[in-house]
Length: 226
Image 1 (cartoon, rainbow, N blue to C red):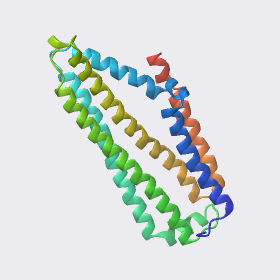
Image 2 (cartoon, helix red, strand yellow; image 1 turned 90 degrees about the horizontal axis):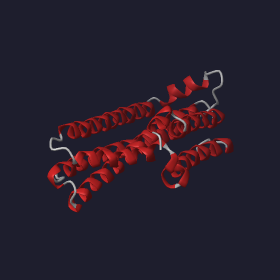
Image 3 (tube, rainbow, N blue to C red; image 1 turned 180 degrees about the vertical axis):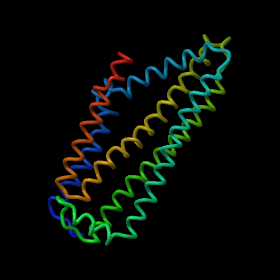
Image 4 (cartoon, rainbow, N blue to C red; image 1 turned 135 degrees about the vertical axis):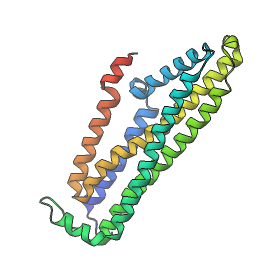
């Protein structure tokens, strides 16, 4: 199919299963609660509890703005990556010859290369939608932040509920941001397929090891504690 060998199909299946499986473990499995992402959610809740006690909330607005700006940067980067992938489609024959001349490069056809580039394009499009939606959710969170009652009402149930809504919205935005960033990480592993299926398997494992280490064994995880 499209000039792909059985090993090619196994390698791309291994890549997709690793990406999806890692995301499921981090977000939905009990072990994910020990990860950095889940611990930061508790600190978002603590941030909003402190926000309730402040009369002047310019600092909170600045933090929200910085989160939005970081998300916008990655969304713009995704568009540049999409443009680069589209440019590869226009010069598939030249790129085929380049990879064929690599020391460990596997022989391929322009059609197979185009399918690989389309796969890369799909990853970057997915990342763009995640970053764009995350940016929108941070915008909603900023609106909810502005609608939070004043510090004089901090102990009332409506104020506590409003702060909890902001924390949940920021967490949801952060979850989509993490999915987009995860797409970038695994896109780097996907590039190994342009060299060969064994390189794709090796690069996918390398990305998995790095992401697991940063999620469950990173210094930042131990800094914020339990």
